[in-house]
Image (cartoon, rainbow, N blue to C red; front, side, top):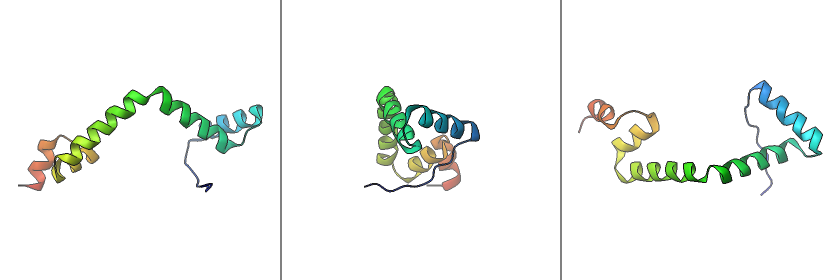
Amino acid sequence: MNTQAPIKVNNATKERIRYVAALTNMSQAEVVDRAITEYAARHADEIAKGMQRAHAALASGDAAIAAYLLDEPLENVQRVAGP
């Protein structure tokens, strides 16, 4: 699948992408793709931990899911949501 969609980055990042692409004879999309691939490889442990936290929230019910998504303690969500 070779679809394109815009991504939002700040102006400084956009300029760095543009410069790197020009200096390496790659497209900006290729620069971003390589950067994401390398980031994911270097931070695989962090990504796995995030997946474990998300899985635990999903397995714990609606209040836990809301707490996870809102980045709030479960107790706060339960207090507002009720039983």
